[in-house]
Amino acid sequence: MKEAKKIPYKIYLEESEMPKEWYNVRADMKNKPAPLLNPGTLEPMTFEELRGVFCDELVRQELDDTTPYFEIPQEIQDFYKMYRPSPLVRAYCLEEALQTPAKIYYKFEGNNTSGSHKLNSAIAQAYYAKKQGLKGVTTETGAGQWGTALSMACAYLGLDCQVYMVKCSYEQKPFRREVMRTYGANVTPSPSETTNVGRKILAEHPGTSGSLGCAISEAVEAAVSQDGYRYVLGSVLSQVLLHQSVIGLETKAALDKYGITPDVIIGCAGGGSNLGGLISPFMGEKLRGEKDYQIIAVEPASCPSITRGRYAYDFCDTGMVCPLAKMYTLGSGFIPSPNHAGGLRYHGMSSVLSQLYDDKLMEAISIEQTAVFDAATKFARIEGILPAPESSHAIKAAMDEAMKCKETGEEKTIVFGLTGTGYFDMVAYEKFNNGEMTDYIPSDDDLAKGFAGLPEV
Image 1 (cartoon, rainbow, N blue to C red):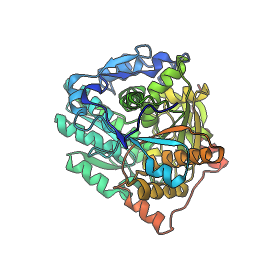
Image 2 (image 1 turned 120 degrees about the vertical axis):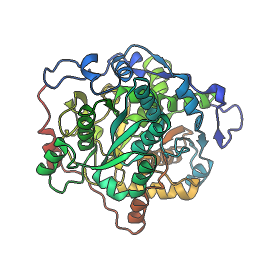
Image 3 (image 1 turned 180 degrees about the horizontal axis):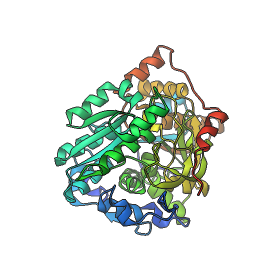
Image 4 (image 1 turned 90 degrees about the horizontal axis):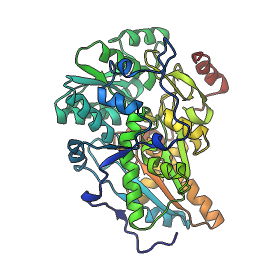
């Protein structure tokens, strides 16, 4: 589409143009995501069953797949204004370096103290916990972005925050851990000796580096065993994708402001919060038959839940205490290698994104770790932002798509999500810079062990 006027390096919305509602893409899905199941009865989870673990309002949002828009409470809108709207950046320097006819844009979500997009949902979930009169919340975190964001939100609202951090990330990223503690959170490496499920996992897997599935199990146990506490999750669940839709709504509004229609939309994919949030309004147009977009999910080759997983009901956690979700999964018992993209180490994918992928409404690719860090360092030198390892999966895919345009001469418009900064990931960058980083791709036999544990549903 011909651009009407010169595009600035950074497109900012006015404060008055910020979204006042979250968009629920499930409302426009012909094939709705399969419901969460009670693992004991194999019946859909009810409001009463879920409210013992999650905040009441969040359960309502989780179960509602027909309401297209949810009003963003004014208190949350006011908090958003501290760091939103976030900029949509035209990557002129990257385009020049690649000598591509493609036009590249990235939505930068790292311009807040937590360093990532996670704050969009953290403040919402903490707000509903506070409104319900709870004492505090428990959660898990992989790379630490979610734990950091939630600790900030809880400090702002005066809630206790207990974080179970995947052990390898706890050790690799001590400064991320200390930011959480600075905001008042209690941070425990997972699996730990502080919960029954943690002790069980350690007994079965001595010396394990942990996984998000392990940390979820511990956080859920901690929540249900303490009065006045609920569990909150930073990705995967439909409620989280709902809150993160603010990313895509802002992106679309910024593009519309200059008459730009993207051809390709790319996001990194771990549990699905960033990707789901970015693509939601665009996917809505696609589902309604209004426009078409190429949408690409990018995941690590070491934890390839979409590209090599099975579409089946599975436990959301390693300890098998959570509901069953139908998703692309490697099996809840799959323990990924301790790669440096800690936020992309979940064994499954959001039920919403899994359904969209199964309906062939989006694509998925996986990329090896060294190729991701190579793209990250090039991006840092060209565009000036040191990206998080997770975000760098999207950067690599966007650069590859731009190079395809160079080969074909197509002038495609590419949009990707730059979910956060990598300033707490310097151990990983050190490994890469020293030539010590390796790639791990699980074998079919490795994956078979995880698949063997899938429940019979």
